[in-house]
Length: 232
Image (tube, rainbow, N blue to C red):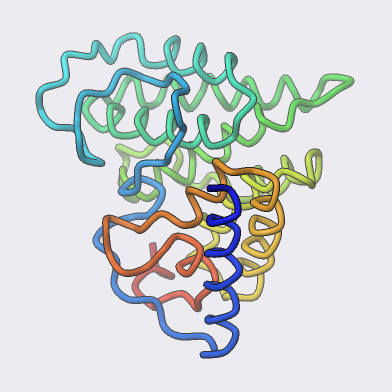
């Protein structure tokens, strides 16, 4: 199975190089939110939907969002678990502005404390930046978004400088950078592919299809950004 994943990744990469860079099609939604990440059997926030979005049948009490989210983040060193947990947290946060702000403040304070420590934690810094970028895609540009004016990508880049060999974090950076010119993002994609050679979970996510469409996540992050995406 592992060989199959890596073969698909190599084939997809070779095809993109052979065909040249194409324009990204219009996607059905923001990629940090509208794509559920494969985390295997790892735990995350409660989830009953069989789709990417809230089903309406959730009975999760968002007053515990900050505590529950940080508990999951602190329990796992796997970046994809953090990505999926922060995606779910963002979906819940849209229903509760107070909890949305509280979570961002908590993760920002956690990141700042880590930066001041003798041994900064890359994941703590990553979490604050990734949540900020996820909020931007789902909560919009208005006052309801506590991450307005925050450069989450810069924090993710800072985390990568602390942990430059994390292919999953490179995948996250590439997704955030979809709104940027292609060269920077494709460099993240290249490093994510390299990491997938020894990371089957990352390989599965790179090979997954965005909202069951024709584009794999790998193809998406290797192409030029569509003008509409660039404005997000």
